[in-house]
Image 1: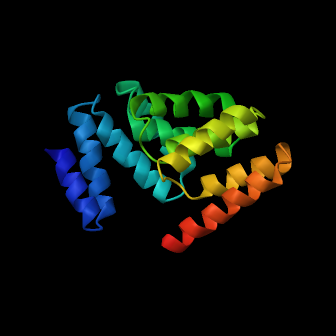
Image 2: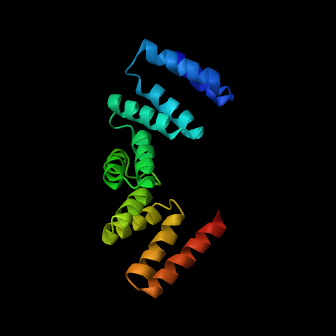
Length: 168
């Protein structure tokens, strides 16, 4: 199909051709969510946030449970401090695949920005348990230091994060 031709062209670095094939896919089937998602990723890669968001939204229109579209658009909203939208999309991604690395971390960041520190801590710990994103160690250490004034726990997570970083 045209979508797979687009994917093949994207893999070999012919992104312009890939875009054409993704658009042809959408012309043939306007509900083909993965074509919109691929276009969103390419727009994101080109730092065209507005276009990327439009394509993520179209992906979710046709597949509301698309894990990566929810996670990516949630990250966009978090970055722009639209925390309720960020939380809604990131929670949807979490419902789809709670074991995926990064989703717990992202929830921790959003809850932290909302000053819901207990939930932030819960999700940072969950991310650490999954041996996921290393910044979860830093963020939970900062929570213990700055919010809970528990310097022993903060030190513990700083040191664990440093050890994990050495392993990578």
